[in-house]
Each structure stands twice: as structure tokens, then as C-alpha cells.
Amino acid sequence: MVRPPEDKPVGTPLFVVTVKGQEGFIDRDGQIAIEPTYQKAYSFRDGLAAVQKEGEWGFIDTRGRVVIEPQFVMVSSFSEGLAAFRDQRFTDPWGFIDKTGKVVIKPQFDCAEDFRNGIAKVGFQTFQSKLLSRIADVGIQCDERFIDRNGKFLPEPSPLHYATGEPGERIPFLNNGMTGFLNAQGEVVIEPRFQQASAFSDGLACARQGGLYGYIDKRGEWAIRPQFRYARSFSEGLAGVRLGEKGWGFIDRDGKVVIPARFGWVYEEFRHGIAGVTFEGKLGYINTKGQWVWQPSD
Image (cartoon, rainbow, N blue to C red; front, top):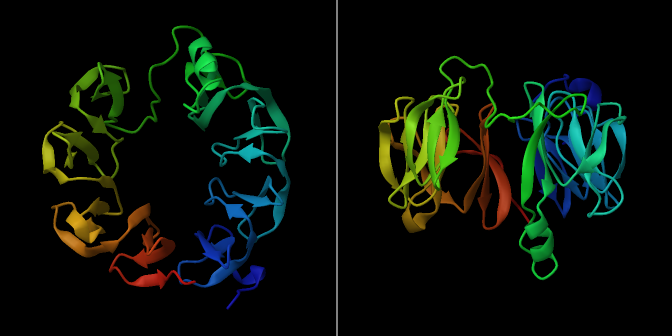
């Protein structure tokens, strides 16, 4: 069943699905809200979703209306009203557009990330990376800088991290290959002793020690001891974890398994009560009880 656009309020959460090789969107009830007519689609962010047609990317709103015509070779999602784009070829540099499709920061960067609190991390490919890329596909290594919304570089020294202004914020940083956490003032509040760690979400951070993942609180103490080979961040009180050979399931903040392992991977953490998971190699969506909202099919 397809709901007509006028029946779908602006701001209704939507989720990407694939039907017969084409991508579109469903609502929280598992009903198709935007017909699967796109080669690829990104999740909605900042009110718009990037969609690909005939190899080019543009943007639509939550009613499925084209806001920016497909014209770009590559794009990122919108953040704070700006999205990164590449225009003609994959070797072209990154720039930024606004929600009308107007170029507001001209293409000039080899690397570009989302804007947060008015600044974005960008970069220029290192000389060594350019040499290596001629002989092997090793990805791009960039010298990083920060820019403001006008494309102007922040004065040196560049900030080492993003601060969001959240009370009691903990920001991951690397030192000698180990991860610790800073506060918003850049002071070390959790010493770098983890092999890997994510940003805090729902008051906990996923961290790896001794080759296994667990979860720490904002004091750096283990709330759930390391015991998982793979794990994702908490969201809406649940986190996806790999439970042995059975696959991925979900645990609560006490570490108790609340959705048994039966999924190939957790594609997307819970959002508006829905999580994206893969089953037999295909993407579907479940609710917090582990019931299918959208079950993968051929």
C-alpha cells in the first residue's frame, strides 16, 4: 500500500528499503511512503534525503518531492543546512551546497565531513598518499583543517575535536594508537587505554579492550564488561552486539539480551523505535520487541 503524499505529515520518520533492486522509503508502520524508484537512497537528515537516478545524485523532501535535481556525482547528507558534493568526476574536489542546490563553498577539498556547530573538518591529500594511490587503491590520506560556514579556515592551531556543547560531554581522541576522552575544554578526562572507542550515546560508549567490546560510563568505568566480538552504540536503550556464531542481537543497558541473535548485521541503530538489520543478506526493519516492521523479501 502506498500512502498519498498529503496523508504523510512533514517530519514523519522514514526508512530506506529496497524493492526489486530499487530504493524508496517506508514509514514506522512498514507502509511504503515514497515509491522505490531510485538506484540508491540515503536516510533523511536535516529534512532531506539524497537519492540517485541515472547515476546522478539529488535530494527529495519527506513528501517525495524533488528539491534539488539529480546532477552530482557524489554527495553527503545535509547537516546544519549544508551538504558536501562532487560535481563531474570522482577525482573532482569536494565543495558544499545549501538546500536550494546553490554552491556556497566552492569545490576545493580532497576530504570533507559534516558540519557540526558551524565548523566542518576538511582536508587535502598528502604527497605520500598521492604517490601511493598511483600504484594501489589504499584510500586517501589527508592533512586535516577546519572551516566555517563561509569556507574560511579556522586560525591555527586547528581544533583537535568537535564539541557539541552537551553538558558533561566526552569526546574520543587518539594517542599512540589508543583511544581516550576529552571534555569540551580539551582536557583529558578518560585516559587513552582503549584499542577503539565510539562517541558516547545514551550515556555509554562502546569500547574495545583485549580484542573484545564492552561499554563504559562517563567516568571511564565498565558498565558492561568487554565480552563481544563486535558491537554498536546504544540508542533508545538498546545496542546491537554480535552474540557468538548465532549472529547479531540486542542487549539493554544491563547487558541482558532482549532481542535474540538471528540477524546478519545491525545496519542502523534504533531510531523512532525502529532498527535496520540484515537477514539472509537483505535489509529489513524491526521494532524494539524484535518483531518485523519490514521483512526482507526477494
